[in-house]
Image (tube, rainbow over all chains, first blue to last red):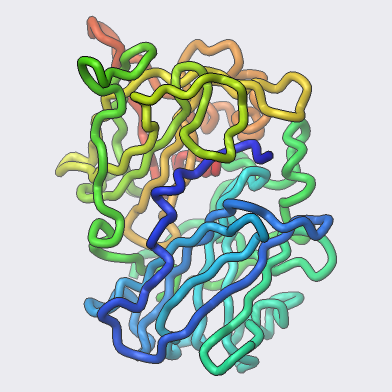
Length: 156
Length: 227
């Protein structure tokens, strides 16, 4: 039973699909979010922000923003367009996490493959920021908040 | 491209907090990494209201749909890092009812639900960066499994400033509430002035209860992020 914040179901519903009217390769991004003892977290809210297929942010044809809540198995799912590379950044998706037990919002980033991106070189454990391709159009990005194999987070 | 200052740890709670046991399960053990901000961090969604439509500017209701509890008005100003109002900013608001119960199915607190209180609204600030919400005052409620931690009355706000990094999710508290100084979440904000910014002010000389509050999305005087 969570402490709260009891983020309204209505606010998370239907905001996890970024593909409507957008050009580019449709992909699914999924993952499980767990805490220190491996327990999956229910109703954790994730928000994403990404470029369009050409690597442009805030482009008129693509909202680029989405929100999803994890289910009882701790699993989230986004349907989106695979982003292109932006200046200075390999194709990636910014993630923001909100939940009870977090004293501020948590920021991280997901990449699609190893690359020369400076973030992947500078951050400890950066291999955990690279999604696993489960299928031609499906990427898995599991997130561990604390403990062994913890996902790197940023002081944004 | 705008520049965004790092958050000041004294004005923003962080880490594992004594008395807030869930932080020990969920807050990262590794220090947060610093990264150079690029286009991804310094841009933000435009026209978010196309995806997240405004809903309900009034949670108290009228007549036989009137929610139980103390009527109040909340005036919240969305302000940016330069102290300027942010017009057209999307704000989500939610809180529990006058008995301490949230609309969410995960809330199994035994307080009664109120069929006339939905408890969630989404509004857009006007030209002056302001939203005005008519609602009922939320109650304090016991946190399950903690043997004696009651959250003081509070209202949740989720705000979009202009860019990804000026996203603010926080909680507004009420002045003069005795539980404020015992709340592990509010008291984790170490700087006293920053803590005071989390508490609304009762507008003086008004004959109705109006609480005024600032949602400063970023910068030196930013409102603490309190998910």
